[in-house]
Image (tube, rainbow, N blue to C red):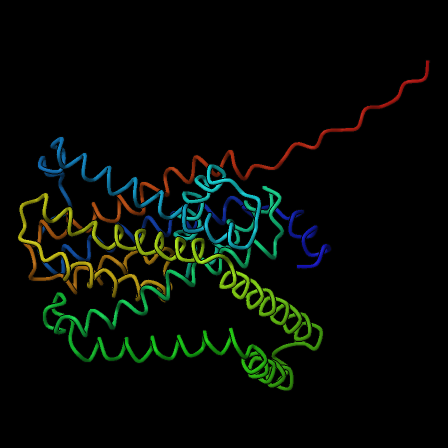
Length: 361
């Protein structure tokens, strides 16, 4: 990104209007409660009640272990990508960003706020905006590639009827969409001019229809061209980095997703439910894939209903509501709470120190 762009970015307020974020947080909370209520009404059962079995020392120890791996792997995957891009950032500086990202990505539709908050945070740690954007995008792409490859793999390794009752039609539709997405990603990486040409044609059409002004069209076109070039350059730099760094980034991504997907299976096992870990992990892989396109903040409401729909019949209704709430609390709500506290300190405006004034004697 150009120097002027970096200066303009640095001058913006990271949180915008507090009312906007409070409104998004309230919407997330409301949709979460509505989702749990809908699960209880549609599938039976009551709102979640804490089960003493989840508070036993062994259970708490396993849950804490999963959370430690989950949060550390999340931070490590971004840290390794930044190292591959030769960004001078220490791992200790990345840990707060784990919780900041969880907060902002879950109170904005399609996780749009998470990327902005991450870039802002890294820019304040002397990482150029373009490099920060490339790193956070690569981190997201790695996770999506793992999910998009794993989802059809579960169909091949286990019949669709064994993956929590997912129908073959649903799985096949998901596989087709995954293939199209991967093709688009490869085109963007290897032939960005093709995709930019299609987007430019669409922008010209909108301009002819007087939906988009000429100045606005040029600004959007310039921004897209710059972003595509930075992304392609950053991804090529990541691939050219030592295999130890890029491979470790991929491995930490797998560990992060594996603990995320396995958390409901752990909760089910601790509640004494007969658990097919492979089936639960496959189900969560599909749910997480679908959540990428949920229009609600953090997939609130949608994720609860999707999980319940795919896992119905695998456990009693009351237990299912509890598992859903505990899964979302441990992997999302807890991180959001920590992120709210961390954001107050990490993203607050820096105080400007006035230059000393000379006094004539």
